Length: 347
Ligand SMILES: [Zn+2]
Ligand SMILES: [Zn+2]
Image 1 (cartoon, rainbow, N blue to C red):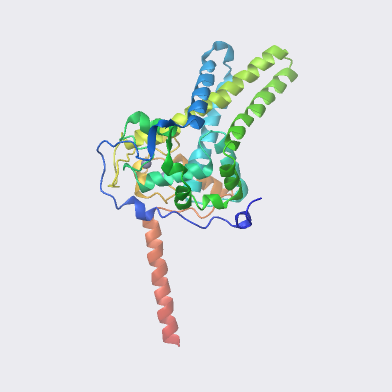
Image 2 (cartoon, rainbow, N blue to C red):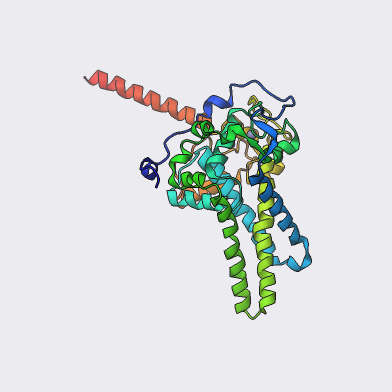
């Protein structure tokens, strides 16, 4: 039973990105692993599933497991499930750059759990820690340690900074106010059930449809296996590497539009495959903003999808870029001052 305070409260605590984004000196020199990681402490809970899913996904190269339906399921899934990470975990839960009803937020999080990329609170805490210490010693996944470390190596060593309760308290307190996310943290095996649970519809649906349309049981099972392999396991591997590329490539390769005090870059290739996330230097310059599109050609697909959801009435309170926020604050203050002066004159 959860404490009552977890049952009704909407998230109200915001992490202060404004105070972390612009105050550090540039850091582009090679780093060492965070001191909170120890080489002998392998995080098997992450390492074994990553190896397992990669090995299963490799089966998809066998001609008997190829189907066009499976390939289409994979391509569509990369975007749908990838957006659960980008739009859901990153821009919604971590940066709170827009607001959605709880049913929609939980839908995104459920899809994100099907990507096997951490629980919501741990993902949020890790990413906020990255913003707070980008390319410094405490950054959980800086590629300035080594490319492979920033890409995926950091996942496989236990990082005491990420598991300590004080990290959750500092970086993900608002996330844990949600009963669903709190429950997931109390049941660390639950994300694994969500992940493998998706295999049931991915297998059962094509199996039944294929069989109903007259295929033999063997052919139907082969077809269903193909859809599951491509739609779940190949898609998972590709979404993993796309997400990890944001951590690795965009802190090494690309151009910089802003002096942000770390080594973030704008990388068009990552922007293309990660629905806009590759404009990472723009993101570090203004993490609270929903859009990372600072020039007309720096297309941010995720932002425009959020705007589309706003037109449908699902999204509200989109956080604009810093200059717009500043202008609005100045306008609000001057209107307030005018109102006070008028009130004084009338009294
Ligand atoms: Zn970054
Ligand atoms: Zn971010």
